[in-house]
Length: 146
Image 1 (cartoon, rainbow, N blue to C red):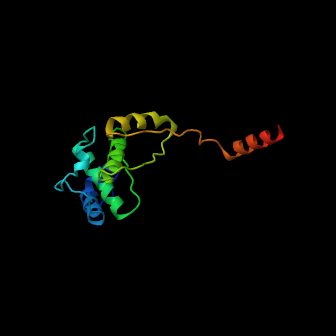
Image 2: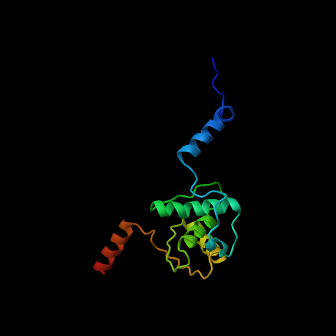
Image 3: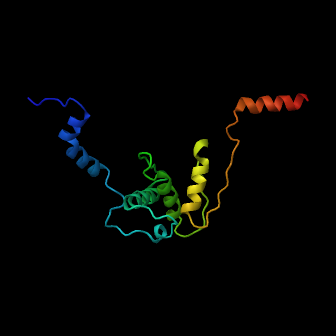
């Protein structure tokens, strides 16, 4: 009788290869290392690492199939660069408008990375949308009574 793994490390040692094979079978990569890199990627001001290019072009190809994609990775892996590069690359050299909904503490980081990454980018920061409905109602009520 086979013993059960005692922790996640044992589980992955025992079943990791089979899990990886199943993931690749059910979710084949959209962009492979042997596929050509699109010219728009080469025009980015910052050059992504090869793994980031694979992810970036995977996102672009996903957008061709569906209207949604997600970039999920550890901190420091370049999610912002991948996202900016995917938006720029998917435009195929045409002018475009993009909206990034970013937590308040990351707004300036996103703006800075946009300038460093996307050629000719213009950034507009929209603030003040955090106001609650009750605050708007309170303000409107006090304005009417004045």
